[in-house]
Every structure is written in structure tokens, then in C-alpha cells.
Length: 148
Length: 223
View 1 (cartoon, rainbow over the protein chains, first blue to last red):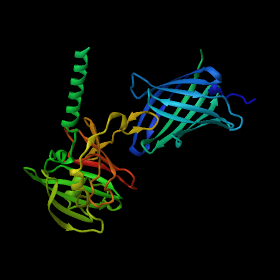
View 2: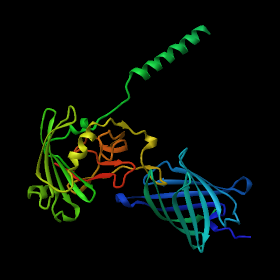
View 3: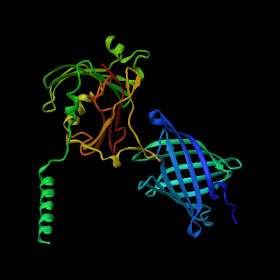
View 4: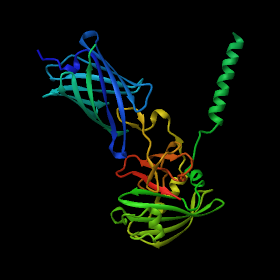
């Protein structure tokens, strides 16, 4: 039985960091709240509220993370970015202390998110995205479990 | 019931008339270019060259424009673009003057004061760009910063300093069949809305889809 990474244990997480657009010398801060709950059929449901810059209303992303697939040695996931927005799919794989998310949009590579465990309930976040129609961005931040 | 169907038919007729008679909102860049004032200039970076386009004179709908090209590696350091022009544009490899009729978007005359191997950009592309029918890009189709869904807008600098633009009009169109490599390709443009303190006669950012190095972006401007 594979041990479940702490990031995939239901609960509440708070994150913060910066969104950087290197090609255009642009960056803004962000805050995030994640709520992970166990859904039907062993699916993990995560609602991410992301406040970009001085946003009062968050961008809401909905994630579905399926049970660990022993053949692929990974978790399959689907993300809906924003209300009725971008649809992404991908996989999560453990690499040492890091959980690596590889994301695809309509089968084409979209980006990678790396969550590195740096202490109990604390991850460093590093992500990089870009596609033909979207501007290349980098996210650097942290994610901390909130005790409830 | 009969009245209800009559109303439905009437509403359908009105919709059809509006659809067939009212033309689509179209825009041509020559309208924006006509708002430029003598002395205003923009500097773009394209294929490792700086291209400076300055409005020298304007009479009615005829505008005189100069274009200077300087390889990015050879641009003298420590000079503002205004100082560079005032010193006679040292290291420029091309200098051309054009008279353009903005009513019809056509080149009236052209004078090459200094020639280089690289064909001047204005000569090759400007008239097609000025005449291309453009439409507003729907909000949902505008360029976004990946994963954040934030709408991306280009930056604009005046005399080397970033300026706050009052907004951009985001447009797209199909490059006309002018026998250039761009013919038939989709073009996307960010045109600054008119405002104080920055020239808005030229797009801040242009991208032609499907070709290498198909982006031209302004790096500076002024008056």
C-alpha cells in the first residue's frame, strides 16, 4: 500500500507567493486557500480559491484527483480553471520529497507544478506554465496546512 | 395565439434585417494612425533591430513619416532615443522618408536617405497594416497569463519610463493578400486607447500567428 502524500490528505491549506511573467517583466503576488475533501468513489475534490494581486473575488479552480494508479505509479487529475474556464488534465507523481504535477491541455503539454515537502504540513511551490495561446508564467510560493 | 405568432414572425424579421443590413463593427489602423501628431515617435524591436518611426509632418490626411533602423547590438548606449535622433542617429543602417495618404492608406512617395540590406519595415508592411480590416477580439478570446486567467496586456514606456495606459483595444484580422510571407495569416494587435503622455498612433504589440519571430513590440515612444 502506497503512503499518501500529506498534500493529498483532506483538510485546508493556505498558500502565498508570486506569479511571474518573465518575458514581459511582470509579476504580482497571490494568496490561495485550498479545501480538500473526500468525494465519491475515492476521488479527492479540491477547491482552490486564488486571490491574484488585490483581487477581492477569487479565481476558483476545481480539481478532481483520482485514486493512486499502481500501474502508472501516479494519480490522475483534472482541473477546471475558473468558472467555465480552462480545462486541464494530468498526473501527480511522487519524486523523493516532491509531488510533481504534469498538466496537459487537450493532450498538449501545459505546465508542471512541483510541491516539495520542507517540513510537517509545509510545501514549497514552484510551477511553470505556457501554451500556444497563453503567456508563459512562473509561480513561486509556499503552501501550509491550516490546523482545524 | 394568432397574435403571438405574428409577433414571433415580426421579431424574426427585425433580427434578420439587423443581421443583413448593419455591417460588422470593423476598424482600420489608418484611423488610429491619423490621430498621431508631428514629433511623436515609437520604437519597436523586430528581428534584432530597433525600428524608430516618427511623424514629421501632417497636412489634412497626408502624413510624412521617417523610419530609422539600427541593429540592437550597435545602438549607442546611454542615449535616450530623443538624444540619439538629435545627434543624427549614429550607427543607423537605414533612414527612409515616406508620405502616406491616410484616407486611402497608400504610400504617395518614398525617399531612401540611407540604405541597408534589411528592407525598411514601413515600406514592406505599413500600408497593408493600415488598410487591414480589424475587429475587436471578444473578451473570452483575449490573451491570458497561463493558469491565472488574468488578461495580459503589453507594457508601454515613454522616454524609458513605464507609463500607465488608459487601456488597450485588442483587435484581430487577416493579413491581406499582398504577396508577403504574412499574407492570409491571423494578426493580433494591442492598440493603446488615446490618453495623456504617450503616443497612441501605432500598436504597442503586434503578433502574426504561425511564423517564427512574428511578434513586433514597442519598447519606447515619446514626442
